Length: 343
Ligand code: ADP
Ligand code: MG
Image 1 (cartoon, rainbow, N blue to C red):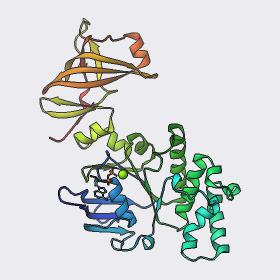
Image 2: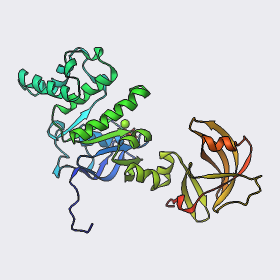
Image 3: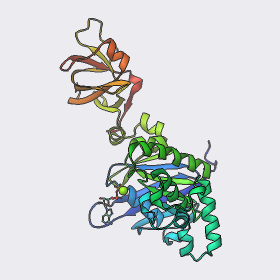
Image 4: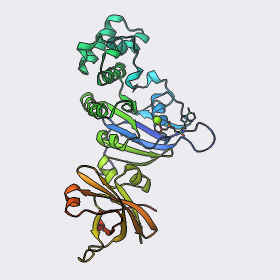
């Protein structure tokens, strides 16, 4: 594409957005970000990296220290939350327990003074959209966890937001329901055609959901890209380590990230010649059976010294040639599978 091509419209654009709560490092440090309209965006990073602060500034629940927030090219930085065109989906346990599903969904319209007939019709329509029309009169306590989550979604959608904001929406659910609900969130986002911005500290959740992942660390953005791009070409050592499944190895020419399923292993005792360079010696320190694969922990010697690394071996490969604790091996990798990291 050449320079005159118009970029796809951004639902949300952050320009040098900054939040400073007190002295010291800002919680959010001059971040720039464009989130494409109709996309599922995950803000991902460790606890305390500034994800929730970023989301709350977009929602209008937190003041901005510097920078701007644009929603479809409108500057919303100083607008009250209700006037922005965003809505926050809260976790299902934030539903009013004494109100029916219908009244929970209609609640914000009631606050706005919308007449009873109209707000009930609109709430019922939304409950139908999330396949809960037949349970509209139930109270949250009479609904399953997944159904409560859908009521929470309908409640957020009643204000007809352009952008839906979700802060760790699945973290209170048990693991089975979490996986089920994340598939539903993804499906709803596509069906509704809305922009979702979803905060999570779970790499797995972000990879499963996102069109665009934004990896944050210490109030800054480390990398923006599709899950495939971020996983296969981590921009920094932080991203490689945080995403998991990678080994960070010091070579003579700098650091590289090598996926643990791309690291090859060969017994040192084996007579066959050592395969392709680059490589390094290592000792097996841990053998974990994981079902479809076996995860080996090893103490390797790279160009900087001792380095703990891991190798993922398909179960059948391990069965052919099991490795024992304390065994000395040689590790190597194909040059094209080593991703260079900036110094
Ligand atoms: P995350 O959601 O990524 O875990 P947060 O945005 O909640 O991170 O927090 C980012 C940083 O800002 C943390 O250091 C946190 O302690 C600090 N922080 C968050 N909220 C407040 C607040 N209301 N007052 C002071 N500091 C805060
Ligand atoms: Mg948070």
